[in-house]
Structures are given as C-alpha cells and as structure tokens.
Length: 589
Ligand code: ADP
Ligand code: MG
Image (cartoon, rainbow, N blue to C red):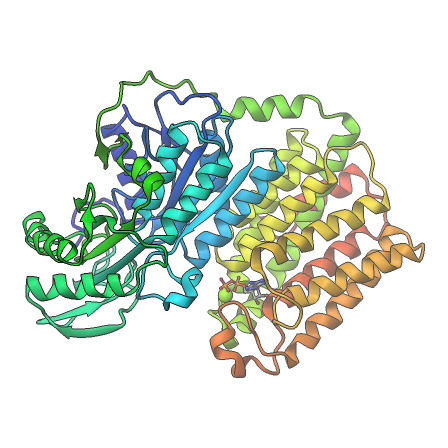
C-alpha cells in the first residue's frame, strides 16, 4: 500500500518535486521531468531516459554525471507525452545531440518517437535505443519484441559513460545497442503492487506461490509455481538467463540483483551470494555487480536478475564513475551549477521576426483548428460508440480533449502574433499532450509536422498545401506504422492525400482539390467497415469490428469535411469571420 499522499492524482508530481528538493545538487526540474543541475561539457551527447513513474530510482534518480543527462517522467506506469520528452531533451541537449533510451513499450515508443522527429526537424540530432532485456516477454528469436525491465540500468550506464567520455552520437548509440543486445533479465513476484489511492493491488500472487516472468507494471507472468527456497530461486534465475545468453557471450558478466520494492536488502544479499557462486561455477567472472533497488515497481514484492555479458569496451564504460542520486560508482570531481535559459525567452525571440502577413495566416490556422474542434465536439458521442464496438470507447472523449486543447493553444499563439508554423506546433503539442490514446499522439504529431512543412511565410501556393498534406500523412504512417487495409485512420488519409494531389495536378484550385479529397476520404472511411483491424486496440476484437467503420478514419473524414466547408471561400475570410470561428461553439464543451 502507498499511505503517504494528499491527493492520489497529484502523487507523481509531488513525489518528483520533493525528489528535486532533496537533490538540487544533481537535478533541476523542467516541464516534463528533470535534467542535470550541474555543468555539462559543450558538445556532450545527452542521454535522455524515461518512462512512467513508480520505478525509482529509475528514471529521475539516474540523472547525473556519468549517467543520464535528463529523465522524462510520465504518470505512474504511464508513458510521458511527446511534449514532455521533447522539452526534457531540449533542456538536456548540450549541443552533441540526444540519445533517447527507454524500455520497449508501445506508448513510450510512439511518444518518444514523435519527440525524436520534432528534435531532428529542429536540427537537434536524436537517436533511440530501446531496452529489450526481459526474456519472459518474447522468445530469443524475437528480441525486438521483448520489453525492458532492470536491464535499463546497464544500457543507460554504458551510454551515459560513453557520452561523459566525449564520444559522438554514433558511437554512444552503437555502444548502447551492444549493451542492450548483451543484457538479459528475468523477474519474479511474490505479491502485487498498489497504485496510490487504490484499495486493491493491481494483481495478486496466491500465498505460498511465486509468479515467474512478471513485468514491472503488473503485466501477467508466464507461470506460477510453489515458493522456492533461496537456493532453488538462484538456480532458476541463473539457469534461465544462461540458457538465453547472446551468441558472442564471453565469460565476464555484470550481475544485477534488483529489488522491485518490498524485498529487504538482507533477503537480496542471501540470494546474491548463491547467484554469484552459481555464476562462478558456470565458469563466469562476475564484474562489479549491483545488489539493491534499481528499477522498482512501486511496492511490488519481487525481484529480478540481470546479466550483461561484457566485452572490453563495455567493461570499460560499465566500470567508469557515475554520480547520481540513485546510483554511484567510483568518484567524480564536483561540478559547478549549470546556467539554464528560461524557455519563454526562446519563444519570444522566435516570434519577433514574424511579419503582419505571416501573423494573419497564423490566425487563419487557428480558425481552421477551431473548426476541427467543433467537428469533433459535435460528434463526440458517435465517435465513442464506434470505438466501443471493438476498442475501448474513448475515441470521442480523447479526440475532444485533444482538439479542444489544440484549438486553445492555437488561439493563444495566434493572439501573440505567431506564424502558421508556430500556431500548428503549439496546437500539435497540446493535442498529443492532452488527448491521451493512440489517436492523440498521431494527430498531435501530424498537425505539428504540417506546420513545420508550411514554415513561416507571408503567402502560400498550392504546392505548399500538397506538401503539408503529405507531411501530415507521413507523420501518421511513420509513427503508427499502419499501412493501407489495417483498418485505421490511414485508410482515410491515403485516399485524401492522393485525391488532393491529383486534383491539384489537374489544375483545380486548392479549395476545389480539398473538396475532392474530402469526398475520397469520406468514401474510404465508410469502406473501412468491410475491413478487419490489424493495428491498435481493436485488433483482438477484429470480428466484432466487421461491418462498422474505423473510428479514427471517421473522425478524420468529419474534420476534413468541416475544414473544407470553412475554407470554401464562399464568404470572404475576414478577420472577424476567423475570430468567430476561434470563439466557436465548442470552446465551452
Ligand atoms: P486508443 O486506441 O489508444 O484508445 P483512440 O480510441 O483515440 O485511441 O483512437 C483509435 C483510432 O486510432 C483507431 O480507430 C485508428 O484509426 C487509430 N489508430 C490506432 N492505431 C493506429 C496506428 N498504429 N496507426 C494509425 N492509426 C491508428
Ligand atoms: Mg480508443
């Protein structure tokens, strides 16, 4: 149980604020997580880690010299948003680019992936290394499907040490990939963990039993068995990991025995002594091991064993010093405090150069987003019903949260004189941050991508519109990796893009081309009724979904219709008409 909190909904934020208050010599709070508060050499690669909260010392406790440059901190067991990852990475960047590293979970992959696209588009070179150490989560021939657990530490540590040594981004990435490839973990649990404010644990393990292969968020294990003795448990963990060792394994290994939250250190030591003997008996040399809490799962009663098979280079970086609130090794010279620029200054500087014409187009972009918002607000129930057939029923409320937040952010940016690019980037960020769900991340990314393609100009041509539509679609397919026929919004997006391009090619004006594209999108959205979903949450209930259109395809067609009707210049797009759109009927919804 978690007993200490005021409001459970604010638990993770208050915990993070308190953590920073207790560790100001190491970390500074930024919007979305923490970054180092100490000096970083210019040009050093920033290793940015993260994921949901509830795993202390992962992730915020691993920020400091020799390890992570920043940690993105989501809610408990929940992926952070793309905006959070983007802002933390931007604050952590010291000019050498960013390496994102985190456990392989779908939500994290989408949100960090979007942040990566944005950072790269802004010229901050960013790469990603996913941690996939949990041998219980997929077989050996599907390494890339495995999820990340306590092996986070070996990958982060090697990458962080390489960055500290001044290696460039390619080399840091290569070492992190190798560390991950040579890391294996397996966890067991004796009892479940309880979210702050919840009366019941997320799961139970029957008394006298042990669950094998559990995830760190209460994902079910692969089997249950009678509670073993310490010797039997050591034998089980060691034999399973050795059976899964990498091809090019040598005989020097790092061993990490990790407590998940409720196991006493003395118990871990009992087990570690036996594990070390077994590894030695198997001909391995144990190098600089760790035994303690490193990647926890709230108050879960359980533990995991991680092995990293070293080579010379990995051993060098594993042994290098690190100094963070939750993990220390060797000794490091004290560092001076880092001076950080306030983010507002950067925005103000960017806004200064915008002309009156560009700001006028920014107001038009805000008016268009307000139309998108109103279309969603009017159909929120219908979209929810469609998503409830084979999904989780949240598409209406998720789209409303996202579209309302995006329209509000766009309004504020436009009122401050922002260009199309800035209006759409603020809107996209707000959308993915507030919407939650897959569609929110995809819409947020797509809106921001269209904005980047449009840039800041005083006028646009039809080629610009076609490029923006293409960028919108590319963002969705790159992040979501769905193709035609998977029964997602992509099935409406592709015909929309193609019809738009074709009509422009035939010499149609932008508004005419938009109208044809909308017709194509509506027909395609209806036609998804005959498809079985192959991506997203609806996949397991594919049969139920037959005969009903995909909610994401339908919402796209609704929004496109509304925007096209608005832009059909039957009435002039005066400032007062745009202001009326922004005020809209959905703002109060
Ligand atoms: P969630 O699935 O997280 O509950 P929503 O209910 O808001 O999110 O959105 C569901 C819609 O998202 C689906 O109808 C589909 O159109 C779209 N979607 C889901 N996964 C993908 C994907 N990988 N690529 C493109 N669109 C997707
Ligand atoms: Mg849903």
